[in-house]
Length: 212
Image (cartoon, rainbow, N blue to C red; front, side, top):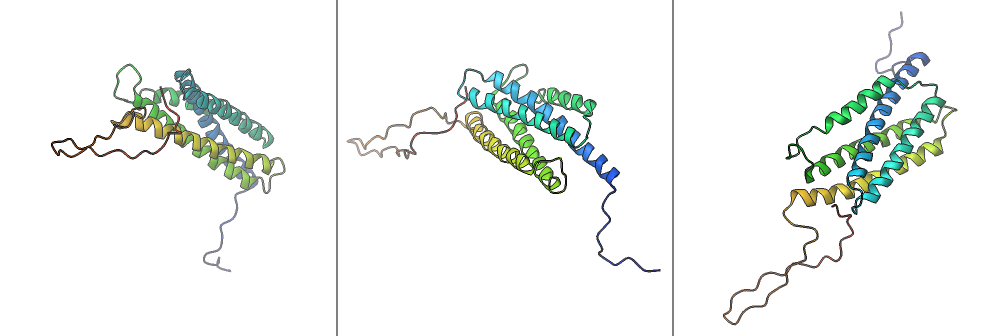
């Protein structure tokens, strides 16, 4: 009897088994997408009328469109949506609102930081999904590789927007310096010879999105 060579690659899963794994994978991401849509829409409503409102509203629209794209891909791949998983994802998002933020019954500036971090993790996971589907598109006739690549590019752009919003929220809530406070004027030495206060270096106008 011939022994199996050491280090030989394991056999690929059967088509049926691979389809089952694909169904689990895509439904997990669909559940995550549904909770992400719920969260980003709530964030957009919370900050409506503030400078952060427009970018959050645009993100909410894009992320909802991405979820629809995922559903279309699942249909093309003959993968049915498992709605109990989606419901569990929505419940998990609602439960996440109970996370301590320093206030018992109201929002605090820390709520913005935590929610943006959660959205950033979700968008990164979505980018990984599009990367995986790009690999699948190399052999799957029903997947448009160019369309998947466009979704991946948009996910990376969404992550960059979230990074900027997160940094501003963290600066506002976790540091004592107010981003809108003017730089203190430098004072010259008095006639008594007391040292002057150090002048703060002018870094130019801030381009960061400021939260309410």
